[in-house]
Image (cartoon, rainbow, N blue to C red):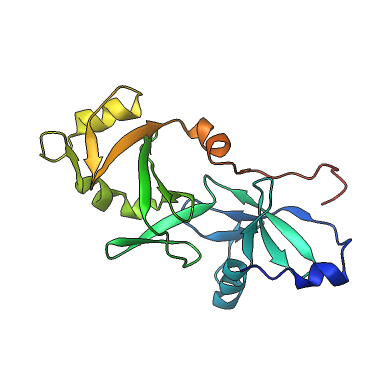
Length: 185
């Protein structure tokens, strides 16, 4: 739960844009440099939240530091049979699974939409099967990636094609938040 108590004391602290980003593997980056300090990562993970317009942020005392997303607000890793977000939160049940034109797997979970870390991709794809029950072949994946129908299942879910350009609107998030007033950085 994001702590918003400092806003009441200092309501006019300007928001910060362009400093913090989340990469495709779930690593935080400050001005492009990967954050490696465990304490800072844990702080960011605890204070990571979303406003009513779909902009993701770090609440740093009275200041909101908006996060530029490399793809989605969540990046998922596997822990056994379950998925966990880059912040350590359980993803919950997987409600839908998607494959985009670049071969990325996206999972709609109880937590939200997220990108599967590419290091988990081979294992996930190996679990996919075609309608006949055999392993899903390259032809089927390529068909789905190019927008053609293909019958691929992952567990009990049909793997669906999705266009990357549709993700933010469909799942109501802002990948690159910007200040309304450019002086407000």
